[in-house]
Length: 161
Image 1 (spheres, one colour):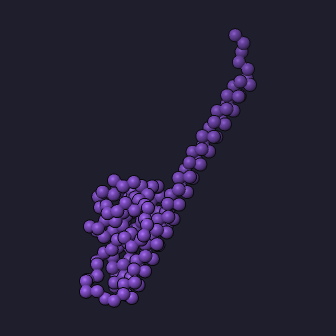
Image 2 (tube, rainbow, N blue to C red; image 1 turned 135 degrees about the vertical axis):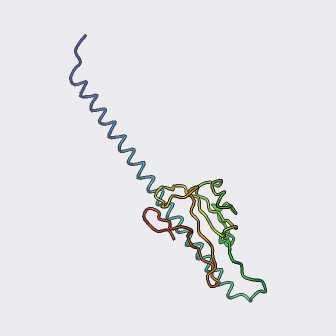
Image 3 (cartoon, rainbow, N blue to C red; image 1 turned 45 degrees about the horizontal axis):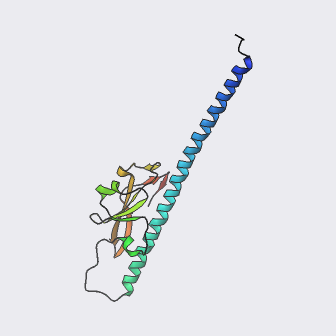
């Protein structure tokens, strides 16, 4: 049997090193993609919250310009009901049942007067939440409805308000 060439051992070592480098690069790329996806979701949530706040402000302005009605003002309001189209709104779902909706979906809980969002990419959210959902109370302050986070959420080191 001929002796193994020293070059064959070197080739095997080279291939092992190339494989290890490729696996490390793929792993690092996947981690970075997950971070970017989470940051994009955070931005989308922040933009949706801004749109909902603007909608609540416009509703208040419209109420102040309309003639007064005899009925009392509501204590809570579903801001999604004021919008014409909400493709990722699942309707009324309680805090306890938010795990039943698909990730990336907004809900309204009429029991607590809260809107919630079930996260697609919960990594980076502090404090960690049950069912990977974040919640905001809809409260009237001096007759104007506002959104307040139910916890001090930090998402990728940024405060979520």
